Each structure stands twice: as C-alpha cells, then as structure tokens.
Amino acid sequence: MSKNKLLADLVYIFHFIVIIFVLLAPFTNIPAILILHITFSVCLFVHWYANSNVCSLTVLEANLRGLERSETFTHQFIGPIYDISSTGWSNFIWLITIFIMCIAVYKLYNTDKFKTAWKCYYNLKENSSYTKILECFKPLFLL
Image (cartoon, rainbow, N blue to C red; front, side, top):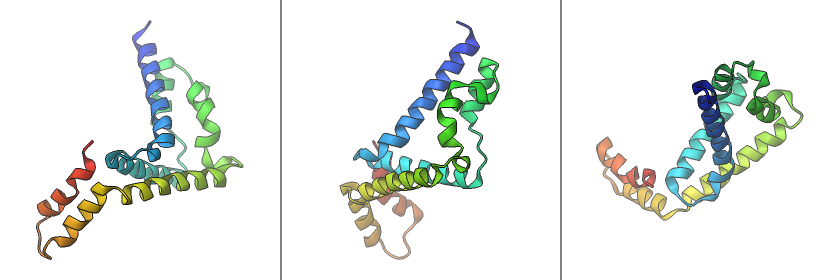
C-alpha cells in the first residue's frame, strides 16, 4: 500500500468520524463534548452561510488519491448535503442541525458541572481576575 493511499484512507476515516460526531455528540452527557459540538455546529453554520463549499478534508483526500475533488467517495456521499445551498433539502438540514445543536445546548445547560460553574461565577466579586473566572469554568472542559 502506498503512503499516499494510506494517508488518504486515514483522512477518509477521520472525515467519517467527524460526521458521526456531529450526529451523535449531542446525545452524550459529557459537558466537554457538548461544548465541542456546539462550537463545531456554529462553525458549520458560518461555513454554510458563507457558502464556500470546500471541505479541506475532501481536498486533501483528493490530492492524496490523485483525483478531482468531485470524484472522491466522500464528496459524492456528503456533497448533496454539504453543498447546502444547492439542494432542495437545505432548509430541512438547517433545521435539523439547529435542532441537534439546541439539544446539546439544553443538555449542557442542565448538567451539574454547568450549574456549579455558573454558581461559582455568580458568586465572584465584581473585580475578580480572569484567572478566577476561568477557574470556575475549567471543570466544564475536562473529560
């Protein structure tokens, strides 16, 4: 197996993991995963709105395989969804993605770690340092 094919296969697997993450992460109770999902979703919305329609992972995979971007399996599989503005499903996909992100926000907001972090922040003095504020929220980012 050539080095390029192996790297292209690894990029493909990573791309697949990203898709699974976007679909399943909101259904966990781990605050760090929920925060990552919310952040990723916001970035995805910005990307869709900007309509750049170029995924760096697909471009990398295409270059490693010596193909045009549109010829990769990943592009053919994700393209109809990823090219959000040119599909009849665009509004539906936006709504589903917003709904899934709202699940993540709701679940994060209702975790004990978030409630503890918010209470810590609320109890700080008005002139508290950024370090103290960050200490309140640090547990949210730990797995």
